[in-house]
Amino acid sequence: MFMTYLTPQIIAEVTGGEFIGRSSEREVRVVGAVKDNREVKRGNLFVCIRGARADGHSFANSAFESGAACCLAETRINDAHGPYVLVPSTLEAVKKLGGYYRALFDMPVIGITGSVGKTTTKELTAAVLGTKYNVLKTPANMNNELGVPLTLLSLTEQHEAAVIEMGISDFGEMSRLAAMVRPDICIITEIGYSHLEALGDRNGVLQAKGEVFEFMDTTGFAVLNRDNDLLRAYDPGINKVTFGLDAGNDFRAENVRLVGTDKVEFEIVSKNSRFTACVPSYGVHLAKLAAAAAAVGSLLGLTDENIIEGLFSYKPVDGRSNVIKTGFITLIDDCYNANPNSVRAALSSLSSLPNRRVAILGDMLDLSALSDQLHREVGSFAAQNGIDCLICCGKNAAFIYEGYLSGGGENAYYYQNKDELSAVLPVLIKENDAALVKASHSMKFEELLPVLLTAGGDKV
Image (cartoon, rainbow, N blue to C red; front, side):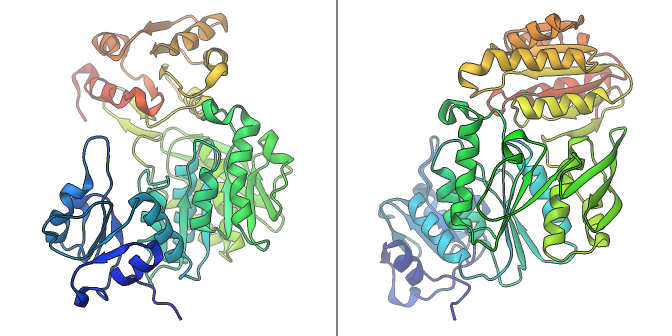
């Protein structure tokens, strides 16, 4: 029987690294792993990562002083205050450790991927499973080749299930993530227009996401959005359960009702059940993603009552459809990221709100040769879905502006950069507006939020 914890000796053996330290330190218990010395808790493994702005090796001794039990390093640490394992690449080493450590645990592991909705689905699924299990879930944006193994290394004997978000941008990445995660159930939320510079088109996106199923047992389950044209016909090679809004889905949301910005109500319908549920957050898209969470809950033996309770306990993640009522406007902070699918979903939710509906949109990046067309289509969609005012900012967003006007929209503004927009934004926003803010992450549209929060002279 394996131990469900690590030691410097085990870390050296798994990674093929060199243990450096006193002999008595070889068997020190190591629990959890971090890459930021400010997050170190007693017993952690500190992984020294060379970043663009800082080299983690410089903070190794600070990590030891904060209680780290061991470090993983690529270069020798001068006057090390504790044991460390020297490896050629700390990133490759931590991935080996993550895969090794996950294999020590016999519990349901749910992987979540897709072009849009991954984080929300992760939170909904973890909330549902949390009514029965002690659940580990991916924190914040730790869904890449460093974040995933760090998350897996935080498993403890108290955990009974894990929900792991897996984000990719190129071929082969999913294989490397799935080799560590080895999910028993995998949700694919959507196959849309994302990371097209590397993946080419939506078929490439599906191929890259589908790599996950090569690392799943045939007894596992693929939980797929059947509303998506490519996923509808897709054969994952394992058991397939579908979710969405269409009648042909195994788990579907019906009678979806957005109640202002406070909640969305709907019915979850499956072969053996029908019940009313509510997610106390904003966005019609939540109903479909709740159906995915309900599917996973059902597969793992949860009752309808468990699922209802879990969905009602959901809390949104900052920057993802987070609603702030400032006293002057209703601000919808959805500026964490954007692609055509997620922007359309955000606009659909915005269109259902009362009063003047304002969309503040920026560039959607990594869309390759389709960029101009997809930006125009988003603008046209905004016009056709009753968006009263469109404010665009960024080089590519000029095509959203064009699409809105050609689609019949009338009240539109375009600015080349955020400084120009920030200067006029207080004048463009009116009392009682519902204002959506959304753009790709690197556009840093969160910098516009302080202007909107203080519009009208009121502060949150």
